[in-house]
Length: 396
Image (tube, rainbow, N blue to C red):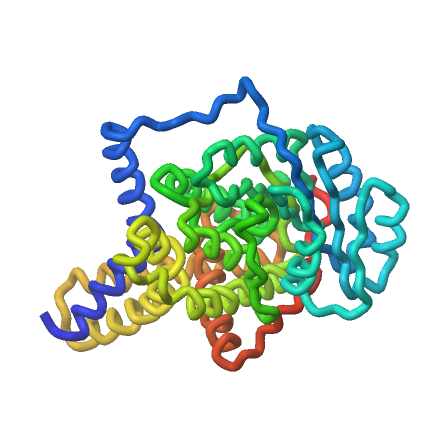
């Protein structure tokens, strides 16, 4: 087998493993494990209601902050056991005035905008409760969210709990909205299996909870604060549990441009995080987490995007140099796939939904963003200071 054909087959394998193979293998491992390890179900008969702080970091969210506040105040949890903190550093619109009109909420504000990471680090100094729930300002939560998160902390080995993220997509949603929704449905399934084996591979910032004692300030330039916080807890020997019945709902990005900008930022933050979590690659030091971390996270941000390009280039070279017919079949399949992605892009720009085309489109869309995110990481061009994500205002 030539070097080029070896690169081709390795590329095909790594792409398939990163997006499909890991999920299948994880499911098989879990099924086998169930024969030897009895699953412990957390009972619902006795609610666990320790004191908890509910924290929201917001920046210029005047258009939505009242809805977020009302949603937070309506949560089903003992009022005397829940402290609510909103931190709004740098906000220059009416966000602060709206928050001040609700006496139950503690407002933390500084005029200088240093980014979400610094805001959360500062706000954590005001936390007196054993647990903290983090939630984004542009999401709405289900009524029992705090109860669903807290009950997982009955297990002393649980250091954090990841909630569910749901994308609200209307029947006639744009292609990027449908693509984003399907992506998160698949991610939710992997989270469920990851958590059953050992731990969720990184909590989403829309909704997660941590043991306050395990929180450590993270560097000011951190792009993905939720990712670093949850893996920092893993490194202390604790697991991140998954609570699918605690969910945050948000609408899709307002446009392809906004979604692409968000994906690029996440990719840049992913490379930054991997550079700071190199010790997690050491299986002998972290035997419970290395395989899951590499398969679910590292390969998605490194091997898969690179191998997509290598698979296409080596496939073309092999066909041009007279390779067997099977390579022509693979090349034809790749051409059809990328052609469908291109059609999906054109339809998305025209705000036309097509299930046949938006899946390949969104897949390519995500991986292209990884390349630009990697470039920003290398040039240190991605600021940790976050911008408000433009989201669709209504669904349906």
